[in-house]
Amino acid sequence: MPPCFNRLALLIITALLLVGCASTPSISLEKDKTGPIATVALLRVTESQQFIVRNLSKLPVLGGGAIGGTIAGVVEAKRTETFVDEYNRRSVQLSASLVGNLQRELNSSGMQISYFPDEFAKLKDGADDYSHIKTDKDAILSIWFGPVGYIAKGAIADAPYEPWVVVHVRLLQSKTMQVLSQTTYTAGYKAKQA
Image (cartoon, rainbow, N blue to C red; front, side):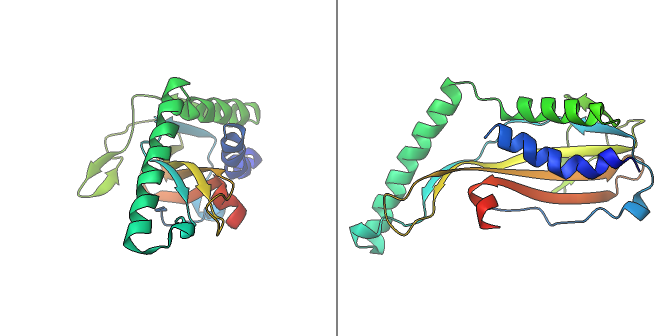
C-alpha cells in the first residue's frame, strides 16, 4: 500500500481545520487485509444540513426548570437561524474546500483520487447502499458532513463559542463494497474534548 494512504486521516482533519451528535461506528483500516490501494473514487460530498449554535450551560442564570429550558431553546433556535443566514449569505462551501484539498494533497503524494460528483450512497432498507456504483478504482471514499456550528461548553451563560464541524468518512473496497475503514472526525469544539 502506498505510504500516502497512511496520510488520509491526517489530510481530512487538516482540510477541516483549514475551513473551519451522532457518529458512525469506528472501523480501523487493517492494512494487511485491504490489498494495495493506489486509486480512489471520491463520491459526491454535499454541504451539511445540520446546523447548531448551542450553549451547553442551558442559561442557568434563568433558574433552570421548564421556563429556563424553554427560554434557552428559543435563544439557541434564534442563534442557529442567525448562523444559517450568515452561512448562506456568505455562500460557505465547506464541501468544495474539503474535496479540493483532498484531491490536491493525495494526488501530489502519489495516490490517484478522482472525484465522482454525480455518485453517492443511496438509502436502502435503512442503510447506505453503494451497489449501484461502478468504478475501476481500487477503493471508494464516501464522506459526509454531520453537524456544523458553534458550541459554548461553559457553565456560565456567556461562555465563549467555539466552531464545531463533524465529518464522517467511509472507505470501501470497490469490487465487494466491503467497508475497509470508517471514522467520525471532529474539528473545533469536540476535537478539544477528545
